[in-house]
Image (cartoon, rainbow, N blue to C red; front, top):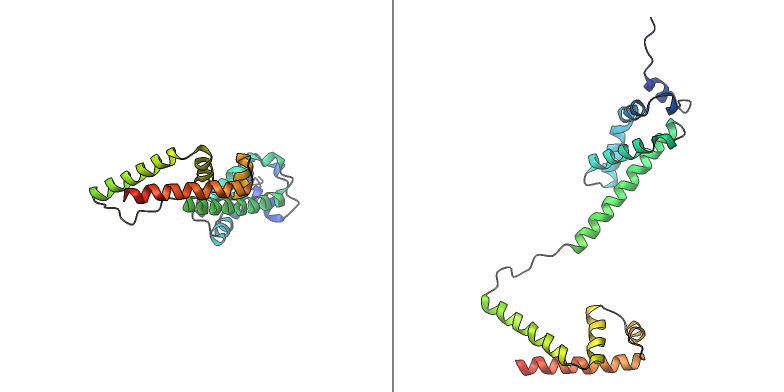
Length: 183
């Protein structure tokens, strides 16, 4: 009686193996047996913080798209490129997350007096901003809150860049005067 042939013999043989000869589950399991370690090493060397999860996601993606693959060689290449892409995406995600993470405050313990004075200063500044003429307030908010350049502010307000400079300078002078009068 002939022993049933394991698909690994065909896949390991090279490009003549056709994944369509096997069921999807068996073919992906075989691919896992043959390439898991090398894909894990690839993800780790590329800098993945969690190479196991990257490789697991890559196998999931190849499982979902198995019917679109042409042969066993394209399956390995697809798996390799998927691991590279997923690692790149994870690294990018971590960089963005770290950039936007809230930095711990240097003075975690502030006195009640300092907190009250800070809130009071902020309230005075917002009140002074509200008392400014509309154009000055708008120019200051666009410049300092949204970080727009003078040309962008001019376009947004429908005025010249010279007018933006004038409104910004006058608004800052009025705010400075209000804050100094408070102190």
